[in-house]
Image (cartoon, rainbow, N blue to C red; front, side, top):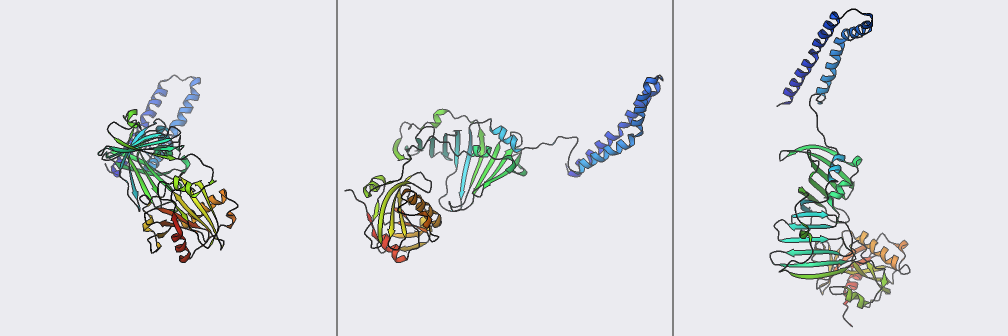
Length: 438
């Protein structure tokens, strides 16, 4: 039905409503004529007389108001529906678990498979690749976080224990949505999808996260949630799409068990995430702490002072880092960082960066896209642990970070407070020697 026809029908109803008041007048007048003239009725008659005298004015006033309402798109005959953000939050508070499909589209780097994710609560979840080839189960309720990953076709898997990483709660998308402040939520209007009317809302809590939520008009529950992470100093941009929501799904507790299923060959990996106080260490400590080749700096003429310390990764991975600080004779501070989180198979962005140079024996140095920020984090951490070694007040605007890739694929970071010539960088890289068992 067109908009014009709707308006005509409503105006017809309005006309019938206004004209029907004539019968009210006749009824009143007939009743007055048939009543006996008593003094007590005079005030009532005067009151009714005043009403009937102004009937025409009332008619036109009512008609004007109703017509204005129609023109404004407001129906006085039909109740309009709307969805407010408070209603969405109220409905979400009724559910403690949900299932959704999640797709991640990255601007660069490896793409992730589409996953079906089941959240039992804020500390337990199960996620499956769409074809069921890979299953991951997370249990973060205890002091140690446990992650079981299964490859169903090969009947193999890994059980990862993150010692001291828990208890913790998942960065759950629904929980994040519930925290939106109503005054900061922008309404996007409606759209039709699969025969449903969806109401849209947008919330951008900061420059790193931009949420769009579409909810069902009837259930007030999310149908689609999209999160945009613009490209920033913390990584490449990506968009996360969540849809196919099911609230209160039927998977039982056994589906969230991290016990290895029968018939699977499981490899156990243990990582220590317990808090550590920065402390001085030896080259042998670095060798034992790394699950790959460890390196130290050989003798170089510019070295005035050298110190090795163990710290938590200042970039936030919660991994232990083994850091070598060097004071050069020109006053420059160089930080050599090594850790198990440095893995070329995961840090696939490194070869895409500018290749500064490659030494004759195959050591490669790459530029870092966020070199100044990373250098600042490492220099600040070293200064906090060893204030007599480096004063953070001397932090230079020239600071930079480069990634070193050794011939065998081992990755390290080189952060410096001041710029270094290619000749000095090459000399430093070529001085690195493997730490071998005593």
